[in-house]
Length: 260
Ligand SMILES: C[S@@+](CC[C@H](N)C(=O)[O-])C[C@H]1O[C@@H](n2cnc3c(N)ncnc32)[C@H](O)[C@@H]1O
Image (cartoon, rainbow, N blue to C red; front, side, top):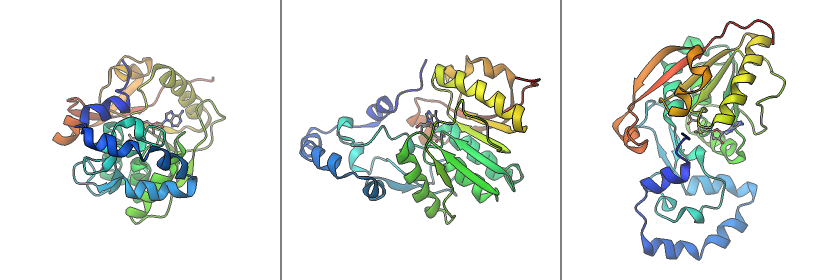
């Protein structure tokens, strides 16, 4: 089973209003043609809300898409950017960030990679814990801009944002790799599993995975090699937004590897 595609999630959450659909339609061309890279930051600021209280990490503020934002109520086809995974704080990332903030020694002084960083919350948590260097990697360029905006919101300097696909690349030296809600697609999960092995083999990297128990994760081969290190009950609003998932768990991946 796949992660509920964000448009489905979006669709479930929306109360579509015909009048707003019609008024948005006239603006589609204008949105699309005006969104050159320099404008994306402004677009994010104008079309998201600053939230925090309703997540597992109320101390981290994020710009997310909420019911107060105009696109929440608009037809999703009017959204002028790639699907905004970065505009949702996923339950796996929430658990990871909560775990780091509860245990600051895990990231303190470490070189940290948040892979599939979305809104950047796990990277921000690592930075708040005193990581020596933090990289937020997401193949969606817009995520990088959202992450920089969210860093500023939380009073920290921008983390390094990379948009290349690192999975399968030569492993670089990170002490800690964070993966929030990244096992939603079988091919992605398989590639990640192989690449994580190469990172651990090359650099002894610690790998932490946050996941709310999605079937695609539970059924993956990597699952039986994981050690549970924390579990958090999700806030009621997060449960409702995520089709009734109730908890999110942090796992450590520490396989006994020989040589690859
Ligand atoms: C479900 S979201 C999770 C975001 C964030 N980790 C969280 O928990 O809030 C998955 C993210 O992974 C990103 N992604 C998908 N494939 C990727 C890849 N090969 N490398 C880096 N990021 C990827 C998507 O763009 C998306 O932002």
